[in-house]
Length: 517
Image (cartoon, rainbow, N blue to C red; front, side, top):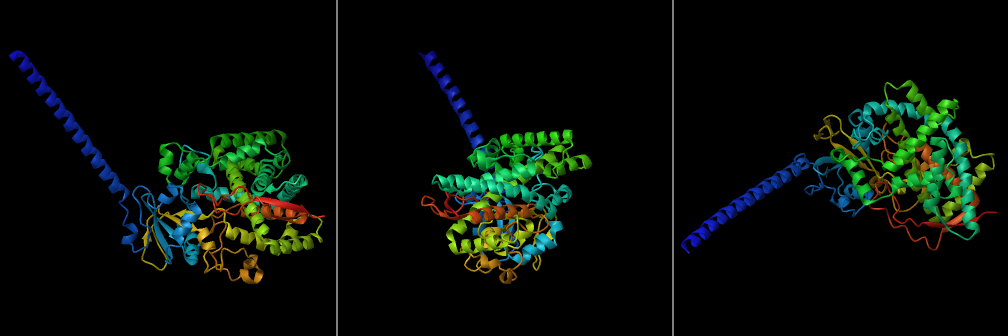
């Protein structure tokens, strides 16, 4: 019995020591975790007083997210988020935080002009795109580093010259005729037309013809492979939103997790299409004087400056840069014309009057349509598809008329949407009023307040092409149809909270067309 009792005692002591050891390890582990949490918190909040110390009004950051918590929760669209920040103060600039990174929102139009145009050499770079594992996404013109961007933009600019646009107008007019046929076909059986679907097919066919040199024919055939692949880019799954957000705002995470900008199925398909067309052109010696020919020339003459991936990247840049922006702009313009019958009638009168003096829809004829330009300009004011603009400061910079110096690497934003809806610059901004852009009123618009395609040397390279495509669509439709919103169209419900672009939340903006005899 004594021996047994002694054995139990020894066993108890051993168990107690083991429990003490485990307990000690738990305490050590908890202490390590606590220290790591404290260090992480200190790191994430290290800049929380950055703007306060500089005397700049700012948005109070949330640990980990900075100012981006509403976007992370998908409670608000990117455009509405920056517009809300824009309206938070009357100060010329406003501090915010991209995670822990101090950033600046520029509000004053004169300051925007001074910094992004006058001092462009300090603001040539953009956020995002610095991911070596993604040779396509990183090397599109939009994200190219300044040194490469300058050369590539110089090479691509001739593609959007007046002479090239005049040649492309022939192709765009042909697609416009197909758009009219598509609407007639729907209307003949009593169907309304989804404006977003029709606009998307219209732009897809234009991109295929003008950029890739082949006929897509989505408007005639309905769903085509090229259209389906293009739509993959705009499909806003949760993971795509997260991945794109990382690529744009947190390139460090994009590098860590090998995140790429484009959907890989659509990227590979478009690469293959371009390389196939490029190969056929080289073998046949045929020239269409289009984007493919231009990029073949760049590859041949400047192979020492650009890798093939950098050249291919520009086809994706121009495709996706046109696909969303132009289709949404066309759809929004049609929506506004449905709601403004008087504007629609006046525009139809101008188009018919001008075209009675011209055999075809030429650049010369379109230039004479001043009211059409006013309508498109006002639609782009109300619905700037790219609602924000960003630049990154490349060297220490003292903000004009202040003692505030921002560091190199500081992201600077402009809320295009906020400026366009500022009643100081555009009274009654919610009202669709093309007269804002009449010759006599346009002169009163303050420079830097109307910037649907950005501002400065690094603005949108394809803006003239996009506006031309929208105008041709409106000309073709208004000449042939009267139109209004269908009964089942619903109302405009604002913008999709998951999208970076101003994308309509209501995808069922159906339009009822009545052919004009």
